[in-house]
Length: 385
Image (tube, rainbow, N blue to C red; front, top):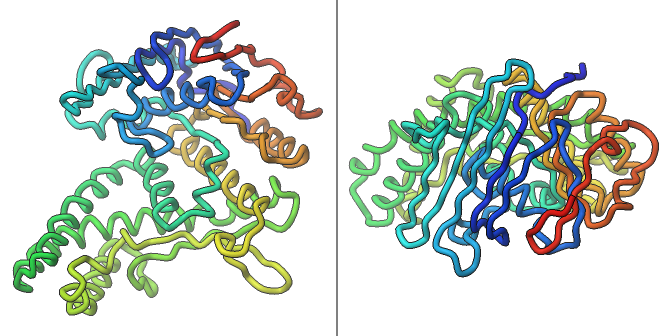
């Protein structure tokens, strides 16, 4: 079902000393824009700034200090957003100072009680050629994808993740120091409680979206779709609840306790999870990370972003803003057109799309929303309309 209007659109974006932008202030049309510029002009940096206001981290995994323009002491990003249906407005800002390594975030002028309280206010999904790493990269890439999707759309997931990471660090420090078993085990309850929540959320999300992932990868790729399965860092057997998972987690920690003392690290838990992304080929199931073609991996990555957008749409009852970073660069015309058809069919919010040249917007017949986007040029961090 298509949603005609996004819940939240960016009206204004102000950047100061962010990446290659010295001082930039932009007013965005309600439908969005197509930004045209050569590689290195700053197109992706613009999308990164918008996405930064969603999770307050770089979408490319860069540390905050690398986001500060060379020669500057700090960056500042401000976005003003409006609900297209209710007229409600919100302003989100983020700043980082290199000398003190301090990040400051505000929502409507006030700092949130916790940074997690401000995460997800912008409602953004980004599509990028770099998404190939989700499929082709190590398990950490897929865990990162899962946790960002869940943190911005499932209440309580981010808090559990932060708690788990804190306890895991402390527990690892005890194991590395050769602490007595009783000292290490004192951290187990916290690890199990937070870890069971993370595992439960991840397993539930994969189960709920397995069929849609296969459908999307089939529609984008024009061939039988890829499949998605959860590979938890503990043996789940037939666990159905967080309580069941906690019992199994505790059992697994007991089983690996001797090996943990030998290796000085926690060996069981959601920090060892993975997503299996597979496809049927020549009568057998292949792991796309190991044996998939570049086309299969790109298709699977796009399908993951599609179901991320569906997750955001379902959680917030509205279509998210879409950031499309040169998504047609390494796709054939057929895949490009099918992506646009899916976006038009399922509903989209405000769109900010980047391409290196205007002809890249000629993606064939079909949905007209790309043609209706206002076109901006970009050169060396400057916008020309």
